[in-house]
Image (cartoon, rainbow, N blue to C red; front, side, top):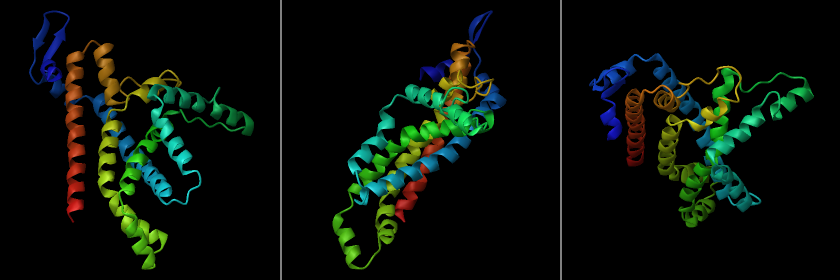
Length: 262
């Protein structure tokens, strides 16, 4: 409520804070830096979220199959990255990515290559890899919990009828994942649009100006508020991003409800 309130004001060097109505919002509509950051997280969401959820579902199905050796170790080790703070995870991967001092640098020295995963053209993919490593295990547990509710009598009946393992997965397990899939998609979309920690930490580790102050909407709002002394404009940005995120999440939820009602 306070963010909405201050978004209608503007702080000036002379005259103090004054009421400007929707001026901050109209300015936001033509702010190319803002829409550039929105487009970047939208691309990040479209590419990274499906990859992450596919891996999470595959891991959950592998664990649920009861044919995986060391199931408990696999489940714990997969979830473990989620327990690592995002700042620590980003620092770890930042040093791994280092072309001069990290694992990538050692690889380049050994094989005589010139790979740089922190260059601007692939930087977003490198950040996506960090997020995938962090949150795949969390989503895997959601999928696995959903699979655990399926009565084993269904599997026995399907086996008696001659169903193969793939037919059981396709006809019994995958339909059961629809509800949890909607939850994980909504959570992942919200998390992607809130992307901040990873690019903010990598900003000082990436050469040049590959990660700008407006790389993501959250970074843009943070820098506007705390570095640019434009907290009112940053509040308007935050409100608009909240509306965009809620609209997308609501659309996903409606689509999921329609699928479940079929």
